[in-house]
Amino acid sequence: MIPRTRAPAELFALAERQAGVLSREQAAAHGISDRVRERFLEIGLWQPLARGIYWARSRPNWEGLAWAGVLIGGDGSGLIGHAAGHLHGLVDSPPEIIEIGLPAGRRRVNHPPWEFKQRRLAMAGEPPALSVDDTVLDLCQGADIERMTSIIADAVGGRRTTLRRLREALDARPRYQGRRTLLPILREIGNGTHSLLERRYTLDVERAHGLPSAQRQARLGAHRVDNYYAEYRLIVELDGREFHVGSRLRADVQRDNDHLAGGLLTLRFGWPEVTWTPCATAMRVADVLIRNGWSGMPQRCERCDDAELHRR
Image 1 (cartoon, rainbow, N blue to C red):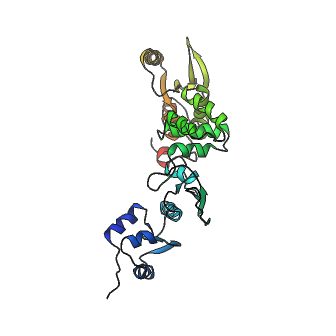
Image 2: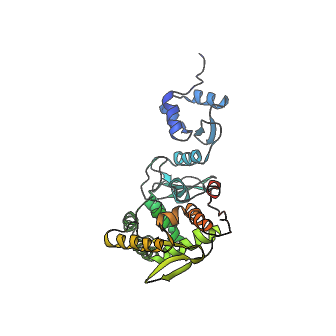
């Protein structure tokens, strides 16, 4: 009898769903005997990643390693910490250590790149992970106020979650450390507090990209504007609330029209533009500044995509 040299289509589909990673138990459930499994390893069709975990592609990537950690952890386990943050788009760079949460009472031996911790919170998704809301709360633990504000503003501004969902997740964790610090931040962001949004604009849009400094809360006629680039005839207004309606919206439009009639252009940005896409926002501001006489050029920050700098 010629040994099998191909995996069943159903097992191949499962491996594709799991970023190329399979467990011994999954292989056995699809009819792969120990002898066939050893044959796959001998001919290089599969490669061992950890005890009982196999890689069915040429090289493992971060997602494959994340899946491997979950399979090592077993049913009910999932990504937590910065690993969950990266999966949800809350953490830019894939972490070197992949944290895996285990059900209560289960233990696994830490082995790089995996680190196992017991967690009582439910996991969901593919690969299984903490919810976005619980991940945000985890990332905030131990952070200073500035970092907490940044994490929450990025998550809400990027439409990964909402303030209501974060409050509900916080209410479900009565022993959460840092509650007294976190609650005021949630309230301030919910109220559209200008000081927080202005600070993010100054740091992440202006300074990070080498733009000129605007006059803050400058008075123009009967009104104040958030950011006034007088030399370049540009106003940048920051709206803490996502939408203005009714009389507030009409007042904004009227004020913008009055400024435009006087030769001043107004750009308006909210939390999403300032916290989630600060590089694109900086390039938009730079376009107007250059058109109106600024002789400088925007600088690349650590988050910038090369395409942004060469967009114009």
